[in-house]
Length: 252
Image (cartoon, rainbow, N blue to C red; front, side, top):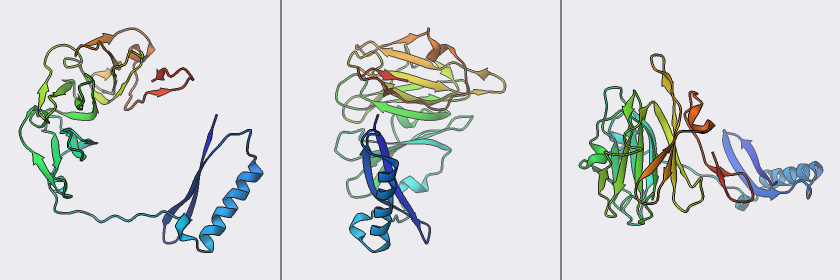
């Protein structure tokens, strides 16, 4: 198994410098060699080799629509929803009584336009985490938006030109819970993306089991109802698919 090493130095005034990244295998390097590497990196910084140091500065933007619209935002996604080669921004908002989500189209000149029409931004739901993927393999990104307070989750299909249609029948459009987050992964290795949704809970409702939807490859999903990933109930707020074997099967 590979070991990933970041050599970091904290230099006044409270700056963090990433000197170099390395991949090592335990049978190829010893702790003594690692210490030598760290010392060499420190000397490079201390005696002035700036080309080895990466640092970044940010300027706070105060006039863009992205930062002037107020909302109870819970998550954000940078996605090219209209396939123009530029990243747009989606923000999901959660108020118990409901609130519209925000979508900002990138104007290609470092400015954004707020999208005010369409079901994706007029649903007035207590939205939490959102997750985007091309679930139907048609070349554009579709959106799943989880909802809290025992409200139905929402699923939006992209038509390829940046317009969305909300799915109102079938799953996962009609499940409800305290859905906190969602992830897409091909857990059954059939070439299309499946959806896993994590649920939290409340003092009145208690905890709720998570949801797993198998993509049937025809625009529909089958809800999986057996197995520990969908029957055990915890206060869960996030998940990830990752392959932990050499065969490529994604694990949750």
